[in-house]
Length: 150
Image (cartoon, rainbow, N blue to C red; front, side, top):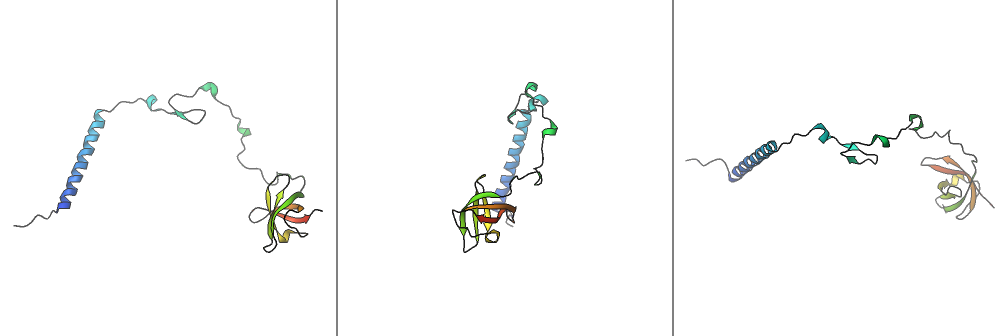
């Protein structure tokens, strides 16, 4: 007589599949039995003035009116920004003579501006007070026409 072709692992896998199917069917029947009829109002969610989700509708008295003309979507253009004095004053915070670059801290805005040896009118070193102009470089603002102040 021939031996059964089903191995032990195949039988176990079949038992697991049947058990999973039965559990799923039981859960489905349980959900159907406990099914509550929810109205549309019970399912509604609202967002309050702070951005939190609530079940109560917002108060119409707290509604803010926004004028659409006051909304500015874009940034200001470079031409719109008027620079009164193109010559700025600053202090050299770092300068490497061997590599030919450094940084200048603007005394008014306290922002750091890159400077290259090609943008120098006179020799500078760390701690020097300088005057310079800012131009747009490859990676951001770059100081040009830099000269030391005596």
